[in-house]
Image 1 (spheres, rainbow, N blue to C red):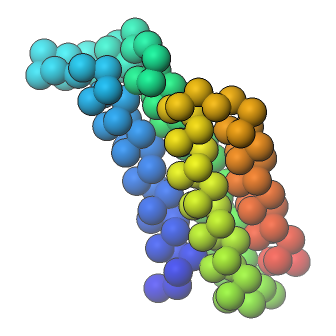
Image 2 (cartoon, rainbow, N blue to C red):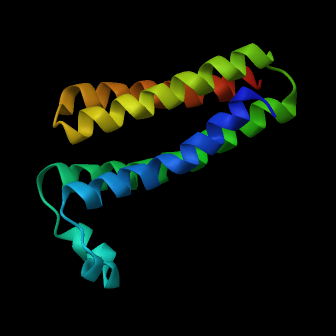
Length: 127
């Protein structure tokens, strides 16, 4: 399994990590587990921002996974190229989460844009 494929696996876990952080920072308790989405919908501050990062992580996962798989299947891109863009994408997602939770909106948007550039670069590499 390539490093890029491992990055897909890591990307799959990122929304769950964000959700866990949102619940923990929002004071999620055993009783809240009956309606966890309702709890997160009412979250404020860091918990709300972590929940928003969770949602964005789900939204961007499919384009990233597809780009990695397409880059592999076409066999037009060097494996190192695929690996580098995939790792950079994961790093961008970690930076995105950090900036979102800490309310650094401009940096968050810039980092999100870089993550999209990583995905586009994977598609271009597949040509």
